[in-house]
Length: 299
Ligand SMILES: [Zn+2]
Image 1 (spheres, helix red, strand yellow):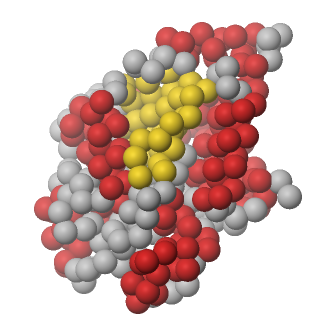
Image 2 (image 1 turned 90 degrees about the horizontal axis):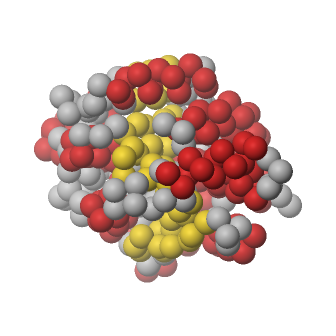
């Protein structure tokens, strides 16, 4: 069965990464930026100039693993063009990426994706803890294997985020929206933070799957150009440009990146409906987003 037509598992993900690497070893580099709670590797793929890059991150939220598939499709799409020597567009992409490279982390939260797809039995020694924390079925699991929501664990308005959680009755590990005991407590978050600190990333994009909208703001550090970029991308995909509210307003990756580096960062919500979005939507979602993704690498 086609990889893109079946539920994503860590095993099938690793196989796909290996396939891409062996097919396009002349174009991409595959490496790990760190490990998850359950010791799974957090992989990144780089193309082009690694000293100045755009960063794309998928599957921060476990049940939004369709974002990993979208990013893998995009990598294969880029490689296909670059590998085709007769294709002027491929040569153009190659030139742009040699000027400013691209790093994609398709799955920041591999343990969470495994829990969302294969259930608590995939969580090894934490299986019983996960069963206790699980409220509905496993498919709506959003957090990592500690029951911490990674997009509530970054050091940007963390105290405000924590107060909001408590006001909403979220005070301990659970399937979604618990930000942990302290900011950067989770290995997945620390891996990404360290990676950003050790590399020059000019712009960052975090992919989620709920709302068909783009968020670009975080406080007064938001660069002026961000609104302009968000509008261009939103017009291409027929998405909205939105302002975050409520529990999602602080402590996310985009927020931290903007506050720390004063460079543009965006959250792109690529679909609508109940998560996990049905795989049958993948092709439509990808083709609606494709032009914007290729535009991002020419920014
Ligand atoms: Zn999300």
